[in-house]
Length: 112
Length: 113
Image (cartoon, rainbow over all chains, first blue to last red):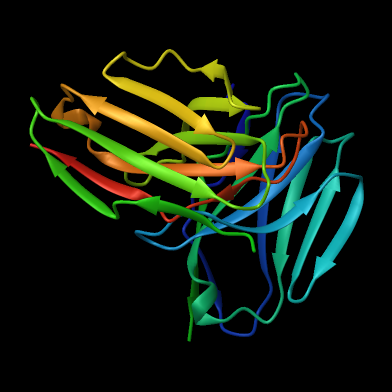
């Protein structure tokens, strides 16, 4: 079983819709969770971090964490064509390692 | 300033060449990382430096040699690489606290001929 799992997509949504991206992880003691956006040919850009159960909102982005179910999600409201990218879920496993475990990424396509 | 810089942006080298990748951050971060990313794959951790000491080496071949001259700088020395080493090499930094946010540089696109 992969440690961090994401649906590879592509996830296609129309402009203005809500895009919902999901991620599950295997290590129950994981403490820190991150969403990165990566445009083709560019480096990952941190867009959200979440550490405790519940929702965290930042502009059009909402991260949701449920540690009991071991999933973290990212909602993008009012999706724009410029949101089209690969979204990487990253988890800092609870082993004290200062390193992230990445999911394989979900490719999002926002249709104008 | 959440900026990590990397040089060069692009590098083409032969299998017998020796080259170095450079990374710099001025955020006062105490942990720095090298990742390798192949097309359509997630970043793959290579090395972690914590407080200027190598703390993680993910069984990387010795043709890759990391160096951390000080808390702001990270180098990756390359020697006798193979064509399959062609990839995007990413540097990242974080505060050094376990679980802290990591910020990536723009990467170096490496091609080995």
